[in-house]
Image 1 (tube, rainbow, N blue to C red):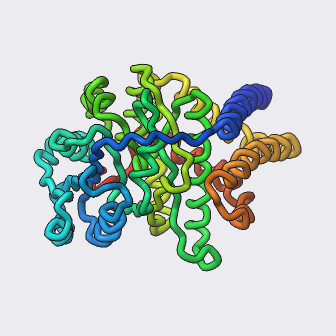
Image 2 (image 1 turned 90 degrees about the horizontal axis):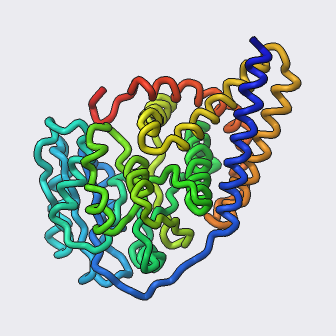
Length: 372
């Protein structure tokens, strides 16, 4: 049995480091672009029960350096039971380019967020569609910098997102873990896209041309999947062979609030991993990559029970590759290297929690927006 485990670990390790080399090469070959063209832009935000966040989000999105007459903001207000709608309306009185759209048929939709986004897109006017979440804050030059990264043949553009921690020294362990874990995902996604592997992106900072959205039929092919308005949409664009790129401009970064505790973090990661099973159809190579991570981590853990020295060597080798990618990405995304003092705790915990969220995601064992 243990020889089987060794074989699985070895194969997974080889594949894992093959993909890591692609991610690292992608980060190293990234380049900034500049397109002076200024198209009309529609910023779309889905919001439900966001009274604690929506004011901060709208303040940042509406106060942009991009010409006001060249962008609109549409908030798809999805049947909130708090004061979200009222807060949005106070902004519409001051900003003529902001619109609150009341979402219909929430209860009939398998994926309420895709339902909300599709209705907002239907009434929008922008040549470029930009997306962020209601609990996010964008920079003053977000729209201007993202649009500048669009080359004439670029159809899809993803951007950097991070967890905002006001004071790192006072942050809880779960928030420091979340920061490094999310950062590792974003750095890998950026390297993958630039390396020609269109694996994933983040809906907190995502954009594409309206023509690309229409070309793939909108969300129609993935409307039955409860989440994944970003990663699964990316796969539709990949299948259509549209040009996908990543923005490395520091002005295009978006920040979001940390989760409240460990259970919320695990629940979120299970929701994200629930998209894995759909990749067999959408992107088999991405499914292989997820399986590689799972096999590599489970191999390390099982080896510790009998061949701990081999397991330790494998873990160190994995950590070395992860650290190279994250370390190089810090120079691009301007992340304080002092935060890497928590790299080893993150590495150890990440190996364990992956074995939880992976299987749980296959069976959709999570809650989202009040739904099981």
